[in-house]
Length: 508
Ligand code: AMP
Image 1 (spheres, rainbow, N blue to C red):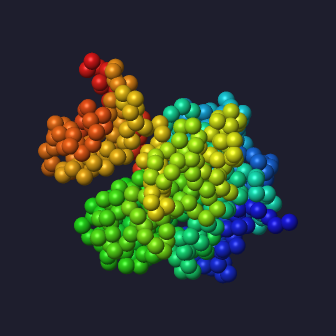
Image 2: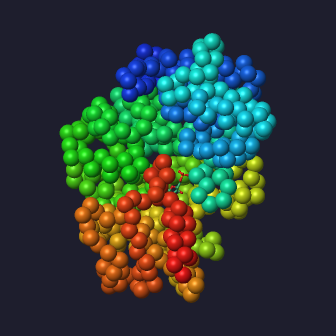
Image 3: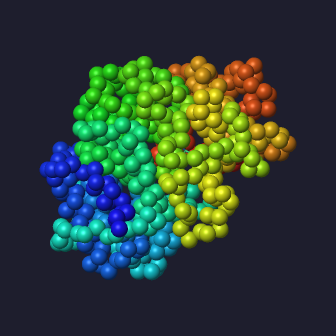
């Protein structure tokens, strides 16, 4: 029987020579494919030596380093479930994740060791090991004493490879269980769809506690036997310096706007690039256009989520339409449904539901929540609202929980944001619903002005009045220097709603 372990599948793409470079760090140190194989074996042996068996969990909250990637691959090889956590999470959140995942081992930054040891002691007594951003700590020290050979554990399609906690902007964060098949099928699909070729070099700047940096970026590169220019984070100067050596770059929209802010950024910087990919948050059509004018490259926008890995993508060959997330990936079904679960025709906005080998089997230890999120015929309710356009491209209009219902009418924030973004003097905007005594919710806009612009509330409201129905026109416009964003570049509308509903309540 073939081994369905994701590591074996990725390994199928490793170069013939174990001397081929796999990772080059910011300091110029090179790890080769042979190192990747040996180092991941040491971590796998470490887990086995500590008594872990396939299916046990390892919770990991560390800074990005090559060793953090080896640790992930070691988990896959030993059949233990990798549970990465955002490095920003604090004590209360960590206690929740450890209590929920019940790991046998927790790997954390040395600075958090005392706190995590206390939490782990209270909650089941997991062993705590450390790893810092230089790859130093008790985890790597213990791994170093292990054998560098490991027979990768046999796994079936449905065995768990990872649990990723959703960002949880409402309610409790849920652990999305991802199987070896979910990740392997998606890796193969993306690798083929995005035309990876021998010699591709990926500039890797994203965090690896999230699906985008770990599953999309690393899996494509590993499956291609590619070199990754491994940066601890997005540093605009380093990216400007390294882009000429890369052929593929993956980023969230804010990274693209930050590149565009660089006066020296242009065709020359991108001369060697084959593909720019964007996702995790909407890429403004304006950014897409400016990028293509400056560099000659049409950014390829794709859509996915923690629970499903990647779902849709603009075509590699063919028109990459700004403001759309492209077509369903091969093997993925996407449908748009109304509130009564009836399919909607093209051009109408409804709930996005999806099915495919990439879609997770459910939330960790939450059977009721899982049952709620799947339809009777096995489609997952993404919680996104969208439509299919006349040429079958999918357009997202926002999360259903961000939909504003004012006086019984639906307002899709993205529609109003696009109008506001087009006004002179506007850099970007976020449209939210605030509690209103008569309308239930009132439309409000939070606007970031271009430097030096003097746009004010009456102007924004006045300009929109002629453009959209009155119920869609914001009743209030707030100006800010910056929109609150999470690490993946998503605007945190819940933060804006909290802040401005409190401010408004105080004014009433
Ligand atoms: P996460 O689980 O953190 O990856 O977040 C998934 C959510 O991010 C999706 O459900 C979408 O709401 C949003 N998202 C991801 N990619 C895009 C995109 N290209 N355009 C708009 N929203 C996106």
